[in-house]
Length: 138
Image (cartoon, rainbow, N blue to C red; front, side, top):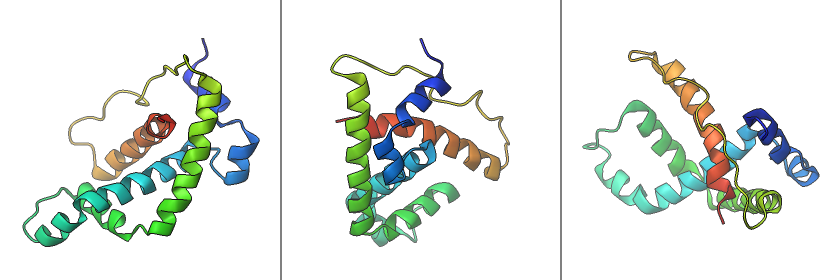
């Protein structure tokens, strides 16, 4: 069995991913963020816009809704093309009966009272690792 870093390196080590600029977990997270944000805004944007004054979203969530609202259809289309490349690559590694098993969090949970900037860094690290599952699905 390979460790998490070795598995991730095996997943990312592909000339097509390099050529498309999606050979890092940060790039995968960005592809996932764009697709997810577009879909969220498509589903909830009208309600959020109509209720923005009354809605009580936390600062991080409110910020992510603002970013989701700015995602264009072209950005979504570009991310979808990259997602297709990633999905097909992962499927070629796994075959019909394989799976990746590795921790989805980079360590122990942050302590209560951790500053929001550190919490955001934590969320980004989790999101990067978990983007694999969101992008690998068929």
